Length: 134
Image (cartoon, rainbow, N blue to C red; front, top):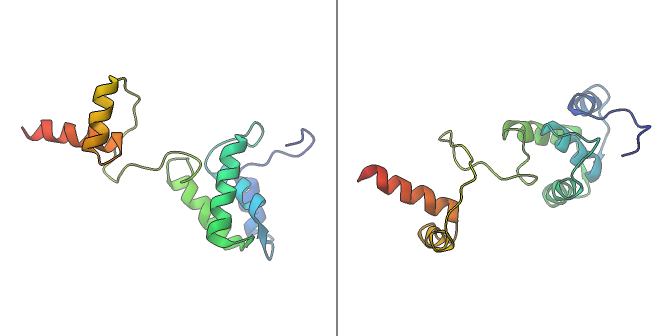
């Protein structure tokens, strides 16, 4: 982003899509709008996260999107706790779970992967659920 460009934030993109909606929106503009809606700044943005969003949107909608589709994606990004589905880790479930970093030994990590059918986080949750019921 060039320093002489005006600040592009969620409100800017929402206004652009509602006040005078363009007939079609390109993938990169849509990705920037979704990125901004996720609560992240476009001043010093994560280039890889922006590209992932753009790739996901292109797979879902093709080269062009409508303003309504962009607004829908922006709402989705905002509803996932400020993280777009592809730009960040997806939500675990609807039970109000929280994400925490933990440290475990490599052997316990492998066991968690086995219990969770290839997903360590699922294995850890399952093991803890089993402990609760015992």
